[in-house]
Image 1 (cartoon, one colour):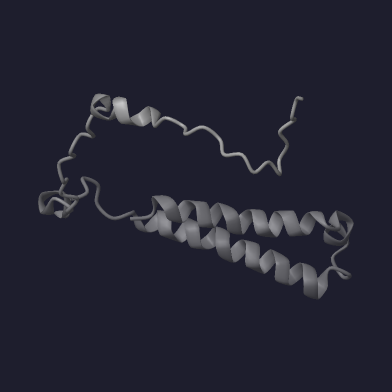
Image 2 (cartoon, rainbow, N blue to C red):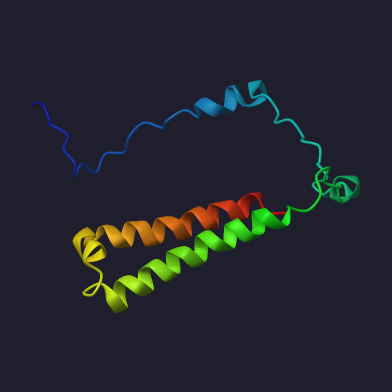
Length: 113
């Protein structure tokens, strides 16, 4: 007579040998890391003198001029575009011109000292 073993079998399974027991001493030990000091070197925080001096007056005048010209262009477009025919003909290009002039002035601020 042959008995089939299923999931509900009451017979006990043979013991499973511990495979890690014989290789426990073969495992390499982890390396101990040295603690690293992450403080900022105070010598690197000293201010450095810039070789070039301040920007010339004409540079600042041109930079502010571009920004103001863009603002004036947009104001004139909003207030008087129906009376200025060539500006009315430009249509939405007036926004590009006005904002473009202001952006040129803002880009110039990156070189301002």
